[in-house]
Image 1 (tube, rainbow, N blue to C red):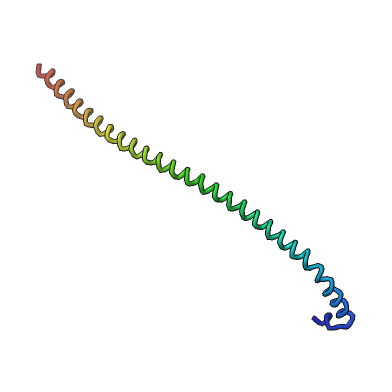
Image 2 (image 1 turned 90 degrees about the vertical axis):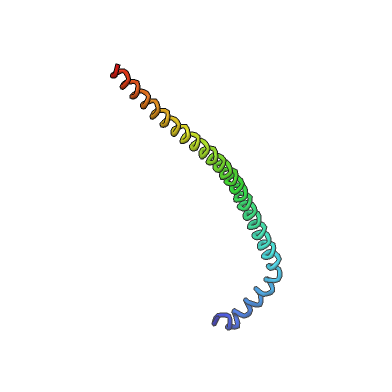
Length: 105
């Protein structure tokens, strides 16, 4: 602040002001390049995220399909288990009945 008020520094500022007019063009070009680089990086990040989303969507659909198949298989196995338990019970009852019959003979 205080340094800018001195006459020797004011001349330097005047010289730098005249140089700033020519320096503004490269600055805007540099800024433009920086923004373009940022856009390119953002687009690449966006594409990467979109690709990951598509991949995960596919995996979720596959897992849901697998889940459905597993539920069906589980239900079928539970039914089969229940039938087998009933058949075993009937078979054991028949065996018991036949053993009693043999003992009576």
